[in-house]
Length: 134
Length: 240
Image (cartoon, rainbow over all chains, first blue to last red):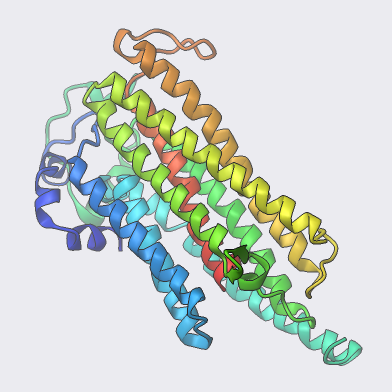
């Protein structure tokens, strides 16, 4: 997702960072300096502001139900993707590092699934023994 | 940083990309992260472990919120502020979000100027980042004070499910601690940049290793991570 976001931002910005592409096509330098044009950071900064405003407006206008939750998640993932890909330079790292860092947190989702079942079960037993509400 | 690695022994053949690149990098019996210094790789791995810590906090919050029979307090009302005679929902949290995002922006610029060897701009931007971070912590202290005076405790609150207080103090407290530590480290690294430690290769007082401008980027990784965690807390705790 990070790379896709970065490409959507403007190819010109990435082209000026093109020497890093040597890492994928040619010789790997011993050490890469993450040096990119200032404009790229300003654009990402502006986008983060816009996305934050959007997610605040979701609450301000009091949207409810699946619309609210899906909008919250979409804005959250877009912001997280921009921060990791551009600010933390993940878009330009070799895939060995990217996957080593990005994939393990996916396991948290497995944990989430388990705990949703567990919490539903707890709620069920609480309702069975203590009634529906105080 | 001791670059004792094998990467310096005149390796010139091209490296494969994509999935073959991953297999080749990990199986080559040398170092898995070919063009990343150990400092940066270890910061990433630390951030990964921190991801699991915050992941577990948010998970426990989710479990408590799903499993309670009592309605969860509405964050939109709990965190509203009375400005000019009307309640504006969640306004303080929104301002805190913008402050933290701005600090991430200044940090990214500081990293950039660091690699351009512009000591002055790097140090000023890092100190600006630290100031924004301190502002964030200050606003968080204000928020805590407001909620505590309104009667929120880890074991109960006036509006609903008792677990609200425990989740709130745990999650935002841990995040605020991270921001505070980040501010302290920002000031330390900014002082080193200002003094030109990274230009002359002056040994650090604790590790006696020579720093490089990459230290600014590693510091930046930590700071952006703090911002990243806030994105998730904002979505799941305040907006949900």
